[in-house]
Length: 125
Image 1 (cartoon, rainbow, N blue to C red):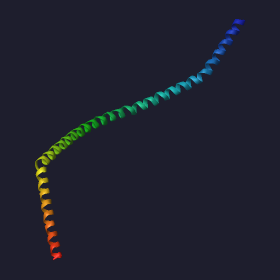
Image 2 (tube, rainbow, N blue to C red):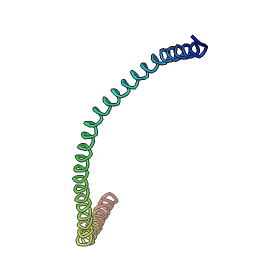
Image 3 (cartoon, rainbow, N blue to C red):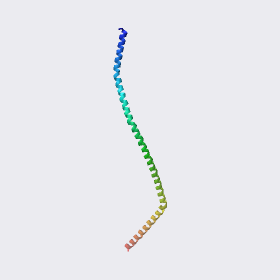
Image 4 (spheres, rainbow, N blue to C red):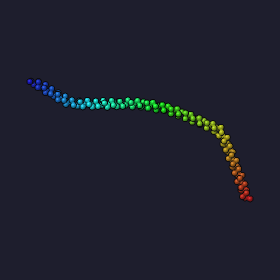
């Protein structure tokens, strides 16, 4: 055996030791990657149905919002109509009703004044 053969044998043994030392971390890294792949697959499997449910929910919410928009539009029309009706009622009956109320108030005050005058006249006599 020559010096070159001994050096080759030492290099081969060093390479075997190096491979043996690196084999364990590489195997553990492979297990970690397998677990990460399984976790990602699990998340993906549970996320896809969740996204489908969210899509359905958003679609139903949009339908309800359209119904609420219709209701709000109708309520605004009713408010406008009620305001117009109130203005029409006030314009049509408001002034005459105020006049009648003022007239009846004046008549009542006059009648009460005459009664008070008669009582004062009776008490003074």
